[in-house]
Length: 173
Image 1 (cartoon, rainbow, N blue to C red):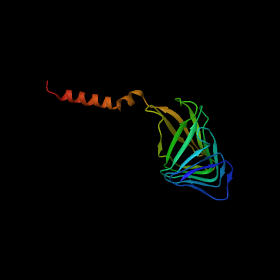
Image 2: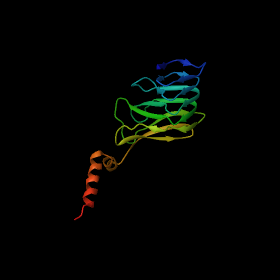
Image 3: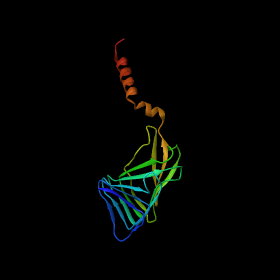
Image 4: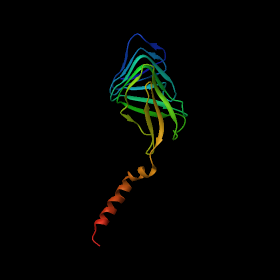
């Protein structure tokens, strides 16, 4: 448990982020494994940075990848030889400005390829959410929006109105 910030090179042995641990920084690692409950967040909190992994970066199921984002195109990035995504969660954390519909970011690159996907992406709000796309050598995120009518339909007030309406429709005239 705790926070490890890498600003130099740790290239002689693999690094594992266990449950309760957080890895950040803008240094270089030999390899990286984030286990369930482990957090990887390149750069430093509130500042965009790049964390480099010479070999394989593995983000297991239950792990979390936190990416600071700024203006469109400006974000933290994990750069690896290969990346293995096991279904963890990705969270885009706005820094200095609110996300806007259409903003896009490259959040992970791997020269040897990306396998797997993230299982979840944390929404910004009821309307804005990160849409994650996968390429052979990268993971990108763009800010997408749900239709406003669909969001309202899911609110408790709207659900109560539907219930009252359905009850009234069943009443004999």
